[in-house]
Amino acid sequence: MTTTDTRIAFIRGQFVPLAEAVIPVMDRGFLFGDGVYEVTAVIEGRLVDDTPHLARLARSLAEIDIPNPFAAPEWTAIEKELMRRNGLRNGLIYIQVTRGVAERAFAYADGLAPTVVLFPQFQPVQYSPLTKTGARIITLPDQRWTRCDIKSTSLLAQVMAKHAVSQAGAHEAWMTRGDQITEGASSTAYIVTAGGDVITRDLSPAVLPGITRQTILKIARARGLTIVERPFTRAEALAATEAFYTSASTIAIPVATIDGHPIGDREPGPVFQDLYAAYMRDLMDLPEAWPAEDGHG
Ligand code: PDD
Image (cartoon, rainbow, N blue to C red; front, side, top):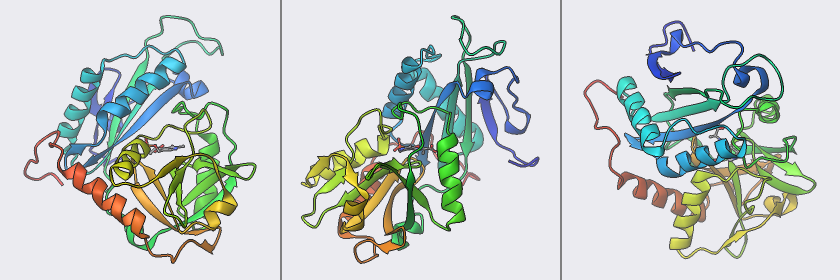
């Protein structure tokens, strides 16, 4: 963010310039990381997978006993208005809800008003150059808590992992518990076996239930691929014919190397290419959330 930032945010009930948006120091999100978040992609004016993202937000809030401040249609109306005010056609919408403002004490009182923040990020989501070259992955221990199914804003383990990624000149970390890979630092991990099966870890508190995962698996099944939802090891990943990862902020990225070992023939493999093309085709069939206007990129 810079002082010339012209983005508009939604904060505590109002649309305001992001540069002027402030949160009280006593907000429990600031003091305790006591909150949850969502990241939703906007591609060519389409709000991608909005309904399941809002359903996951509702679930995350319920799991940590924060009342959901809005019904799904109200959330969508705020997102669309944010897109309109920012001219957001390609990028991300970030949503955060914290428990609210109170005197600092670990235990919380009932009846706090949740703090709601939304802002846009202008970064192209689709057609990353990595979809052609593949990404470099490093593996490192998964240092998170035991409720990774909640999209918590307490992200210290991922901050550390992503710093290691950038120090290593890599693109993403795949995190391990014992010899098994749980998921990416901010993505869902998949491998493809020699027999053509797609393997990704089954849903449990060990991983975030990825929304892009849900969509990609639906597409993969419709295309006749066999999906096996089970834990897989680092050794299996190194021996895979293909590997890839998905998230709202990247959609899908093929893996070129894991800890320096080439995966498959290093080119994006046929399974990845087929799924990615199908994903983008399906997406373009969706209506635009807000029609294109002159002067907006
Ligand atoms: N992260 N696993 C983790 C740990 C994640 O943080 C994410 C997404 C995913 C993929 O979920 P989805 O397909 O619903 O985006 C899996 C977002 C993009 C982020 O934190 O920026």
